[in-house]
Length: 265
Image (cartoon, rainbow, N blue to C red; front, side):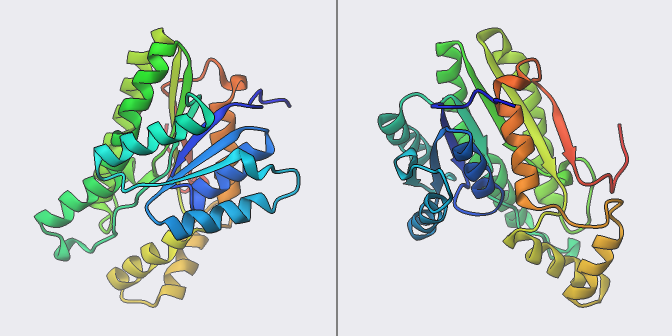
């Protein structure tokens, strides 16, 4: 299936690792030009080298821009720099930031603020200027990689879950607001995924249950109807499809990708 992504400019926040990096790999395979945005310049450089080694990938189609997306001015500067290199952004994939998982007794006001800074505002600071530029041009697609924690309350993920829920509302609201201007906005909610963030979550879950991390991971996997944890590439394929012209009438959708561990409508 031709996803009609050849030559498009895709900007990915959180693109140096995990799901963001997996998305970059798939977009490049589809012929897109990809701008990666993340905080760590070294991690970005390593990500670019990794992506460039893949068969058929042109290293000239990869751009990297270091920015702390907690700062709106830094997000704006990264966007401007990316568009100077590859032109207007056709697709935005937000996958930056993650809220720390914390046991309920350890929560304080600072933890709630930090969660919103880490997960909500890192998305908003890039989403706001990009979607406005897309609307002015009359085209564009946004996919926010959010998380299942915004749908199901977890005792160790309440601040992060609240940020995720807010991002889902923003995704649906932006879809309605900018649909008339030719912009589609969707969200994907991964469940457990084999990334470096998984270990942190398992450690917090293990502490709450009074077991070790390996046991927590085993129990979590046993609850999955598919019997395994998702690979980042599996999430990436869904993201790339939603960003493509093949999903031209899908907007305002919140796609669950938790392996049906929480059956819901």
